[in-house]
Length: 485
Length: 95
Image (cartoon, rainbow over all chains, first blue to last red; front, side, top):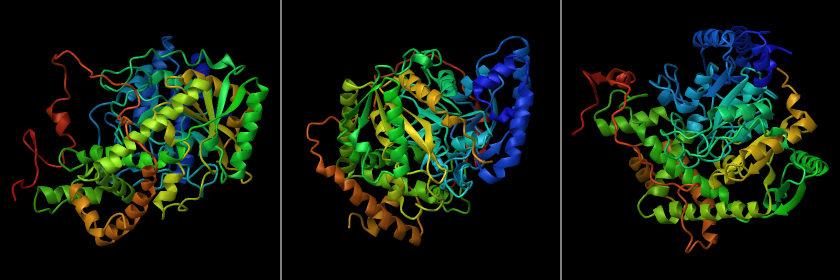
């Protein structure tokens, strides 16, 4: 077992016992990045100098007996998180040289605990994508099979866990962007309830859907990292002022008597046979552990993708209006006036997926179409939310696949955006409903590619999905398998 | 056809996005396909359904109107593509 293989909680014990220092752990991680990231491309920016300074500070804290769960732990951040003094690109040319003047709240909370930031992770441009292929900084490769995508948009955050180039990472999830890459890279990824984690200092894609969450090697780490970043923040008026429970303390609750719902619309014809088999095995395991499983219905599931691609693009078209070349970011040269500067700056700075979504969103909000598209989608969103509320009258947790198939090949879905969008069918409804979901490793396909299992909880039911996930992890050990890198 | 090439051109102008001829062609086809797909929402009767803008109940967030630290002029201008004194500089506004 190398230092870079350890979980947060394992490394924490070693740091506390002074078996290893944070500087040693950070050096080991930086060497590991140097050794394997050329193949994976999980990092856009590596920050060795700052990381070692932070590691030295962490070691001083540890020497003084002041050890928080994340003190001295090497973490990576999706490049959507604003980091003071560290270039933050959001995977886009338009922010290629943007160095933010402040830290966002989640990052500040990690720093308060003394976490060591080793670098900024690759992602789909502005978090728009399901395969990490829309990044200006090149696609990320899946560590389990370098010809496959790691999923997206937090593809770098998931691939770094699988490649053991970060002990833990933060990502964001707007339509599945934490859970789907976690599934494709065999790690744990949790999307908290909307409002659970502050979005201050997180570059906005679709503000009513975006949430920050952890990607980790095991469920305990997800509980630790969520606990570290969750909570009310006056700087995000949509963050919710609800106490943050001790997620780790509740992990071993068990699932005896837990009511687990199986939404029939998620177990459809056309589900990949390997995915189907993994779900059947998971269902059998939960039964054997004493959970009660029953079929439930989420009747508006088939409308979720259409609803999402209207609401998310509408919000994106508004959020991305700020990239105009005036105050920060790329600016086009040789222009005749302000309007031309805007149009050329944006043409040069954005990639095609971002342009496509800005166009769709602008259209959905434009005069004459606003009611037919945007308001219609918001109404269907109400129906989708109601589906979940109804299901949670009957059951405590929902169990579903994360993706209809194991990871797909790089380039496979690029020509047809709609096919790419449809691959998010099982993750998108959770964002529309605003509730929480976790992806955990649930096995491998015949070809050796990872398959994830999704557990969906009630709003602010993170503790329940974490303990449900923990019960599975303890019996299966899929999370201990390592990618061949 | 759900959307024509000239409508796509109009939307690009609204979005302040200069598109090449080939981008206009590609987006016209792709947006047409996506808009045809989202038509499926019309199969649902949503009369009387309240639209959702946020998943959790939101109230206006108030705070006391007290002065606080800000990042300062130099930090705010540090990423400016062009500056003049303590201002962002832009090309000619009145054409």
